[in-house]
Amino acid sequence: ALTVEPVFSHPEWGAMNRAILRSCGLWYAASLLPEHPAAARWRQMAEIIAADNLDRWEIEDASTYHPIWLLYTIWYLELRGQRRRIGSPVYRWYFDYFSRLIAPHGTIPDFGDGDWRSAWFNFVPCFEAAAAELREPHYRWAAARIFRSCSEGRTHERIHLAEVASLLTL
Image (cartoon, rainbow, N blue to C red; front, side, top):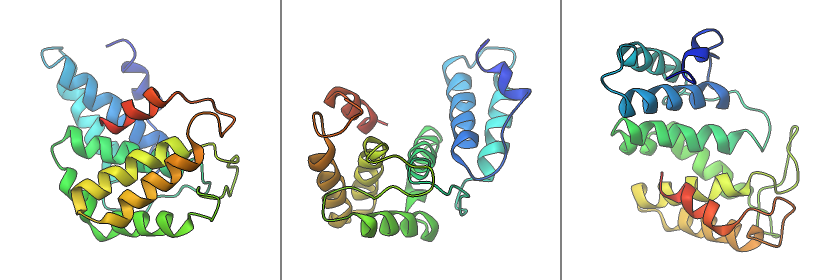
């Protein structure tokens, strides 16, 4: 509970990764501690912040921030039992956009203040969620292509495969 309260002093607004991260944290805390006196307040703030992100265009401008926003938007929708919403035109546009950005080397080139192959492990669960929900095989291909290109030993992050797998459970 103590880790949730600081969000109220700086909640972050708008369609961006930090805002949807706060929405996830607030909703998750309220779900885990439903009897807490502030749980209703946490849910309300989660909904208010998330409203800027759901079925709307986001404002991120770097390859490192897009997948964070998308991943946690999907997670928020799953927490709310609304995963089917990833089939909306807005999210489909993002899945198609990022799948078309996959370069011959197997990942999405960095742009903005992105760093070479620094966000690949966030794209994999996004594409897997899209493939499962929308039954689109090219999204599964995108997840597999990025994973094969960037998995352990091939990038500077040294992400363990178990960490990537844990993201797939969202």
